[in-house]
Length: 325
Image 1 (tube, rainbow, N blue to C red):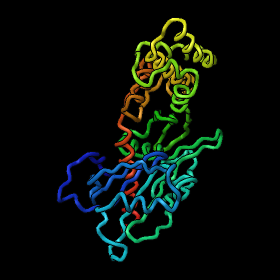
Image 2 (spheres, rainbow, N blue to C red):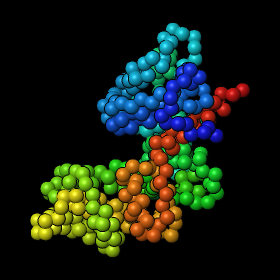
Image 3 (cartoon, rainbow, N blue to C red):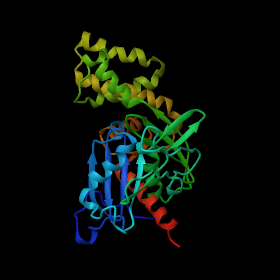
Image 4 (tube, rainbow, N blue to C red):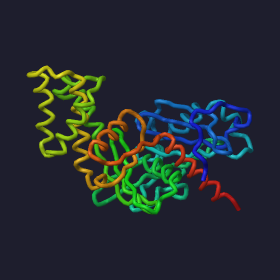
């Protein structure tokens, strides 16, 4: 197993020659890691050239432009092309080329299941990793499965069932067993928060910044006690602001707590009487940790970006083994 690399290393002469490229191509953002032959990071590149801004014919020029001086040889060189292993929305139906979903229960799909889009030049060869789907009920993930692969690559205890939470715009809860994704559920909690805060009547009483930790945990408890009343609980944010002068930062924390509480009410069979690993270390991940801890669930956070890169490294290991005589 490849050791998870340092995300922000110093460049050295020993690690100056790129051997492959790791790519996380999301809807709004692209992250690239230029890797040496030992899967250590030479350079890290971020761009706003996400899937939503690109046509299929734009992906290859985007990569070539961003990688710049790392690709020193032209298309007429006899040197082998550099592999680009990519997870995320580049493999969606609206992306570069569709990488069909694997069906759960299944291990996170790897290089053997990857789609190779057509390439005009000779400097790159691209592998688009698939996502995972369930059909009853219908659900999909694309990109998160690579974080799960990275988590499994670092976890030595795959024989026990595990529960992981992936907070985000569309948060996901997944059950793992024996190195496989058994089932998962997706919640639009983050998107609902953004829509309600910015485009509903609540925009007048919910701030863009600030926090009230006590109000957050109280809202979690309130929603867990009566999840069916969520619509009424949301309007009370407006009423409390009008009648009792509730501060906007308190409104922000209560809105977050109500929505995350509704998600936790729906996922109680995932986290109740179990430990949960949260893939993320940002503010949102800490909110989930606080909420779960308040409910008596043992939760731990791990860095999601490191796991994404670890999952891409695992796919590169698979590629290397497949090419070994």
